[in-house]
Image 1 (cartoon, rainbow, N blue to C red):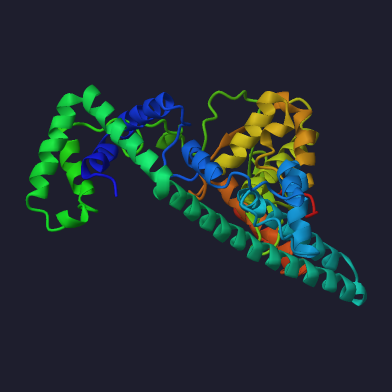
Image 2 (tube, rainbow, N blue to C red):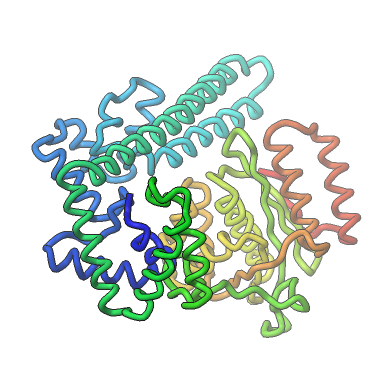
Length: 431
């Protein structure tokens, strides 16, 4: 266990201590990092020294060297065909864990496609399609189980890495670095160090846990010390952090005062399924136009982007020269679309867009990027267009999953339009 003084200093002055540690490590020719974190350079350096000479076998090296798309394909084969014994290798397991969610998303994509196929065919031909849907569900269940296994194996790897830097010669070296770092801190902050020493000496005189090294006392001591010496703005401090700009309450619907009078404004929303990648989207415009449909999305952010793109493309088609402004209550979707529009590059949104449907829509939208704007709208606050878009999105998702018959869907559509007070201009059928 680290000395009580060291733990107090690290708690109250994390940035100053981290800088002193960096200087000490560099002077010793060691990599940067905090020894207790397996992700740090120093911990990795220690682990690599411990495992030196353990060259990964060729199949593991192939998994390390392939690009991300090929790696995800390997995870899909692992679930659908044959378990890959090299994924748990120490050199590969962290990459496996990072990409497991992407592979799981593609499993849900297969379920969504199979659901579409079942609903599109006649009842007499559904048996084979239902078998394919059952296979997709089984594959996705395996992907979910393997994803959990990857997380557990990474936790085990990190535990072993922590043990590597807390035992044996490496632990002794790290203890020397920490002690030297504390001395550096004392030299640069003599008054603070004097306060730390006085506080810990008084504490030890009466602490019943002194024999065990006061394992939990540093938190209370740090709080006392922080009152006398304001914490630095590092980790654990109270330094000012940048915050996202949110419209003031009077502008909570969206900031639209700078738009030309000819602008066509609409609100888009989306709804995602629980078990498959099916999503529904809906939109409603100020001029009374509405629309909805369904697609496949890896998550809510991608589903919202699909709604924005579908709405914008429909409005652009019916308004030849007017600028089109789409409002959405998803900050992830707004930031992704805005980044793509500003850069004229669809790859700017690829962190959010995984599936081909959304990427194709984004490619089409970028051809009109000079006429399109997208802005954030606070959701579920009674905004009529937002409520209508949300209702259309949920209706589209229910239709896509076959959970509502066409006659009921038409009645629901009419109800939404009545609540909006619109005849519903160029409302397309759900795709």
